[in-house]
Structures are given as C-alpha cells and as structure tokens.
Amino acid sequence: MSTTAIITGASTGIGYELALILAKQKVNLVLVARSKEKLVALQSKLSSEFGVQVWVISLDLSNASAAQQVFDQCQQLGLHINYLINNAGFGDYGFFHESDWKKQAEMMQLNIVTLTHLTHLFLPNMLKSKNGKILNVASIAAFLPGPLMSVYYATKAYVLHFSEAIANELEDKGITVTTLCPGPTESGFQKLAAMEDSKLVNGKKMASSKEVAEYGYRAMMEGKKVAIQGTINYLLVNSVRFSPRNTVLKMVRNVQDKK
Image (cartoon, rainbow, N blue to C red):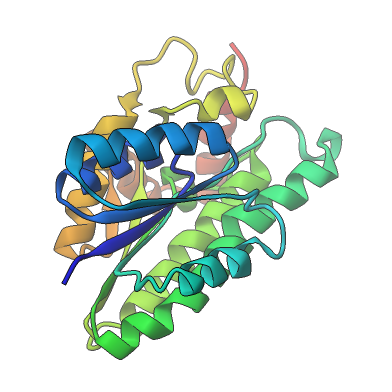
C-alpha cells in the first residue's frame, strides 16, 4: 500500500525541502500553501522526477475554516494520510504594544489553532489503522520567553507542549508525534518577520532549510519526540534550564535587539 503525506507551508523553505525528501522515498504528497503557482510548479517537478502522485491545495491557513477545508478535500479525493506535517507558520518582530493586532491574531490562528485542528481531524483515521506519523514544526523559541517576538515564541511553546502531551497519549497506539525545534534557518522566515537587522540573525551563519528538513525527516521516521536541530541549539536549550528566568529573559532580549 502506498504512503501519503500532507505538508503545510510546502511552497518554500523547510516544507519545500521535506516535500523533496519524501518524494525521493516514493511517498505521495498533498501540498498545502497560499501560492498556487509555486505549488503547481513543485507538483510538476516531483511528479516528473520521482513518479509520485501529488495533489495541491491552495489556501490561506490563517483562516479559521482552512483546516476543515483541507481535511474535506482529502476526504473527497479518497486519501488516507499516513504522515501529517504541520510546517506552516510565521513570526513578527517588534514591541507587542506597537504591533498590528490582525497580524498577531493570524499568527496565533496559523501557528496554534490550524495546527491543532488539522491534528484533531487527521488523527482518528490514523488511529483506525494503528499507524501514522505527525511532525509539528516548532522552534528553539519554544523553550524561551521572547521579548520583541513575544507572541511568536509563545505560539511555539504551545506547539511543543501540545505535541509532547499527545505523543505520550499515543505511545501504545502505533502513532508517533515529533516536534522539530530548529534555530534560525535560511528559509525566508526572517524577511517575513521583519527581523533581518536583529543580532540573532544579522551576519550570522544559519542552518539551511535542507539541513533542517533532513534532520526533521530522520527524527520523524525514528519516532523521536523532541528533535532540536544543531549542537549549539541543543546546548543552548538545555543550558537555560539551569539559569534564572530573569537572566534568560535578558539574554533573549539582548540577542533579539537590532545591531
């Protein structure tokens, strides 16, 4: 029986690279993102190069009804989803009180609600077959408070805690849940979040989307619960556990500030 994966945020960055990796493994794909043009181009590439079936769903996942629409389209196509990859998400940079509320609300809807809703919709069929894998993309931000990106960091903390909790619930049911936690990544995220001038990324060498995707894919296939990409990121995340919260807060603020 063939395997089918759904990837949100598949048109660029980590999602794009995950699509390439899975197609090479002969996994059929449902690709979801806003840009239909980019999705169709990727669909053509993957179908011709790897001989897999690829379906595209062009939607803005920050809309409240988007998760249900994605699920309904998969049902109409008669697809059983073996791997759910919740990769779509975005951030914002700046003081919370100066931020645009619409953007903050859309961020919470996409990063938290849509991810949770998609998981809730696709999980029952995985349970029926007693087989499935879920990969939720968080960030090392999930382990820290985030001055100047307060809502984004908080959304990723939610993703981590939610994913760890259901991973425990599903341990004896044939389904694994992996939370991928990369650090700053060359993916276009920084430009979208308007944080290119922050000390966190300005002039820094970042991991490539391909590196992060390859690491995330391996972690998902191994059923790893939490996957922190990069040795430095792993050491950072674990070191802050033993530091006073106020010290951690000041440290994050310092690296988030503009140069």
